[in-house]
Image (tube, rainbow over all chains, first blue to last red):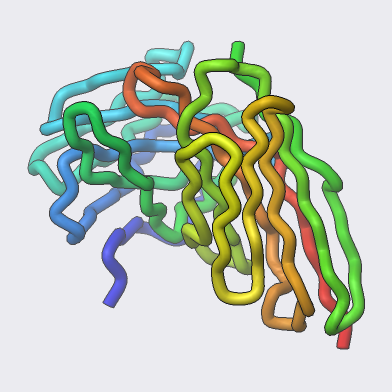
Length: 115
Length: 114
């Protein structure tokens, strides 16, 4: 069974519209993340949440808003979509401990195309 | 900011050959290192994690070497087979990094031909 679910798998949107990318993890982890993979670029860190609180935001644009309604959910709302937002968006999670380390596990991604 | 250079971007080998992917990082506070494998249309699968200085970790058919002196991380696939064809990413996390972000290399597309 998939441990990190992302919905939808593919998404096509028109410029200026708004979309929500869904992420649910069933690993019991306390931290969740969003990364973006654009063509010919490395995976880029966007946000991290710990216990449903924003820890780090590396996204310059306020058009990207994470939403955590439950501790195992971290959705990503994107408003005023632009063609440059076209990318595959990956959700990840980890079990963080004080003074420790933790590997991040990734979902299958949502491939967003903005026309 | 932190950077991770990964090479080569493409690698084509014959079945049974070895394949080496190298990542070089810049942040001296980099402390945790990971290799991920991405098959077509799939998410990233964690292959190996390395935390100590100069360490060799062995997995199923591959070896990971971390050389902190040279700030270099390598993945060596021994006797590659077609099932190893995928994109491989190295990722680095700095000690005390805010939000636990990973910095990724650009990826290496490995093709293993029968």
